[in-house]
Length: 211
Length: 256
Ligand SMILES: Nc1ncnc2c1ncn2[C@@H]1O[C@H](COP(=O)(O)OP(=O)(O)OP(=O)(O)O)[C@@H](O)[C@H]1O
Ligand SMILES: [Mg+2]
Image 1 (cartoon, chains in turn yellow, purple):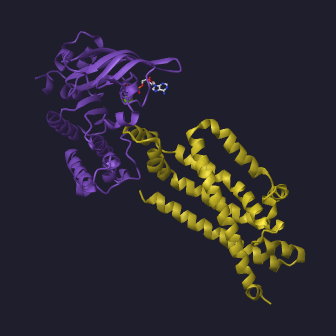
Image 2 (image 1 turned 45 degrees about the vertical axis):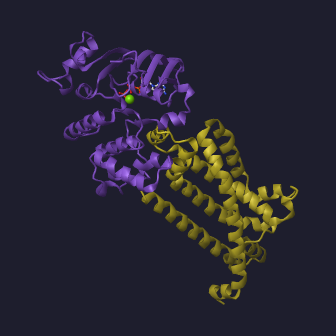
Image 3 (image 1 turned 90 degrees about the horizontal axis):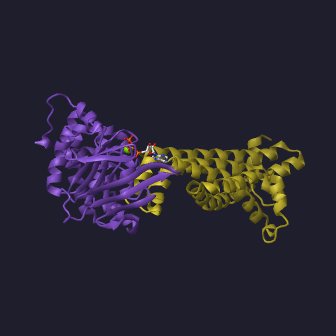
């Protein structure tokens, strides 16, 4: 039986787990952006927050992912459901590139542009929304791209705590010592990462070229 | 010029500005009359840009006072103050993600002008600064030369018709021909609009030609304030140095 036939026979489950995977990653990315972009703005605005914020996000990244899932297990509410726990951990991992790139993007805005905006009487909020965020957007998108690709990979490990997703195949394949089953998880995960990378990369270039 | 009957549009009272104990401006006493063009001239680093930024509160005074239309800048709402004062910066500072049209329309739009009026105003201003609207309206700053960018910067500062204008080397990147042309436009415009203008320039000819008075600065201090005629005859060594850079027989039009 060829690998393709093997995949075809399991297409239903591959589909289900791929969707589950996308859901885990999608929700995590939304939460990480909702937290990371404002934190990045904070860091760019007030350099004194640079160390505590980026330092914490950095520390989270150094924790091996399997260990982080384990640490969160006894936490009340979170530990009750595997997907909650997985999303929390994935969100925490995705923060660093988003915060860092948002801050870098805003800091890279030409000071003369910011000064002209201020000098003409734009409020701090107008400067942020009309000048800084649009000019930082391609760098922010680059951060989202790195974070998404990374999260798609780490999300496979979340299957170890029973959150589902393509990691299921990988762990099952390891237990069964069947490479075909491992590939049923690994190949769709790799494709997802490639597609996300290409799509966000395209958005980034589009925006950069629009002016 | 500044009769006691006039309330100065801008007034510096013993203005001092220091950063980390390093004094950048000190003892500045200067009044600009309404409708007057005052040129600020001085070496690089003498404090000209700093002087402008104290007027629109991009920088806050260390001591002394700056008044705009009789009111201390500290008592103005900074946003209202800046909308009241057009600002042309040295590097133009156009928004790179906006077209020329949107750059010029920035303040009118924020002020809630109706779109037709904004459009007409942009058209009028682009003509005024010598940029054909049909050709330049939809370009981005990246697609303009340095001189064209500066012109857009001037148009943007004029857009909402502020009574006071601060210009930091606004024509620095222009070739001599365009420069002479825009100077003529400036004079024609100024005779109609009578704005209060503080103009920083390195070009003494430009100062003599455009300004009613010339304020000479050195190392964070005001050396003196002269009319174009008295400047040419000033005994002050720094003024004399500037005059010496003029060619023999160069008589500026504004001195006539
Ligand atoms: N934030 C700052 N910290 C320390 N020194 C500063 C700061 N900003 C300006 N200076 C100094 O203040 C002095 C005056 O600067 P300013 O920009 O007003 O000069 P300028 O006359 O406009 O010069 P130029 O003709 O080159 O534009 C300079 O010596 C400059 O180095
Ligand atoms: Mg300057």
